[in-house]
Length: 513
Image 1 (cartoon, rainbow, N blue to C red):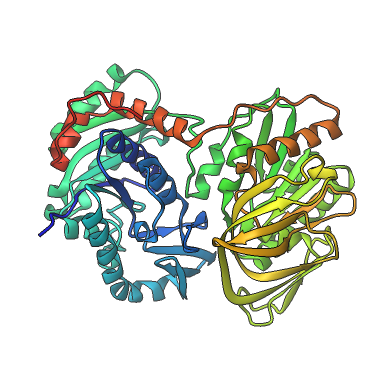
Image 2 (image 1 turned 90 degrees about the vertical axis):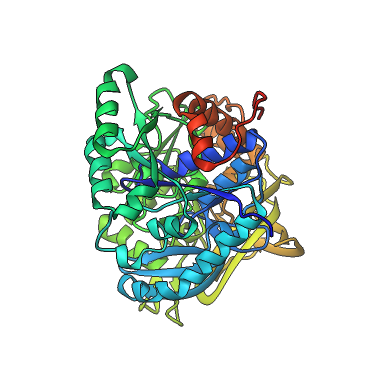
């Protein structure tokens, strides 16, 4: 009988403690050391999702972790994905496919039926890999949710996984968070916690040393590392809360990009390549007075187009966006943002809302109608337009992915893209819509700015229109970010102790990327 792969679980004292980034780095670290590694998170709640080569949907954080491990993303790595659509309602995606819609209370009653999906996915990954790195969600000490847990300590108990507990010192109170979390766990659960990690530390570790010694003495759990605060890693996040400190201010930037921070923003990692450009300032705005006169306004994806359209009007941002466009700002809508830019959004089958229709912003000659069938595809396309935002782009190949429900019908000869393939199958179809002057555009293609040649040319067009020079930065390669993170973790963590905890033999050779 084949021995199941080893496991190591990373849990946090709270959301945004840094679990996802730590798992990403550990995936890369063990992969560099020669082990076959896979990430796993039983249940993810995020609208930052991704489409696999098989056309299945999973959380973006586990995709990033898979890439760090050098393996193809697989929906078993994130078998359950919750995509919030409203404050108390979510779409539940099971093994990459939309399964049902539920309220929070309803979902608690359905979790028992989903537990076998979780365990089967984890068992299959353990049979295939030497090591599975498991990520928890939020905090394991949410005592009001413990009876319905399928993502934290229940997974650890099932797999008998040693747990690293991570606390975020940057937000303050890290020792109380670590101590309190352990105090609220059962004795069986506390026994699984084998190490503490302090994350996002700024300053000298010597100043922290007395606290490290005391928390280890109080809890009986050793501190296995202090990870420094790492700005500008450019590793995709899953929580919209991270947008608050997404990019430091850049007063000397040539271009100003304003991203509308919709209440139900989705796939906000579409913006990451822009934030990596040294001459681009990216701002997330939620008030009309904060919009100003940017060079480019981005309306990103959303899980609730009609509800977020209502929010745009209620806040005054709808009027502000139209006014900025009239004064020369370029506007780009992606997925739900594209739908908003059109004349009308219809929902005759109540796929998304109780409303039958809602007026759009009217900046594009396009109309959208929702349908219950969800389109999830990896796509290749080419640019067919050569003016405005896309001057000099005609013929460029573009790779991206679609995640949307419904179809948008645009005016004749307005599409800036022609699809060549969907989910690996040849196709010929138009995508998107471009205004007559070329400076308002919409598309269903996520990952647009990951295409270096297209991104750079679009930014050059914006700079030329503004009358300023623009020098593109070197393309930020994913592997470089992973390897920078791993170098930091090797210096910050007791890697030898991690190997002992996991039960694998540490390499005797120097690790390579």
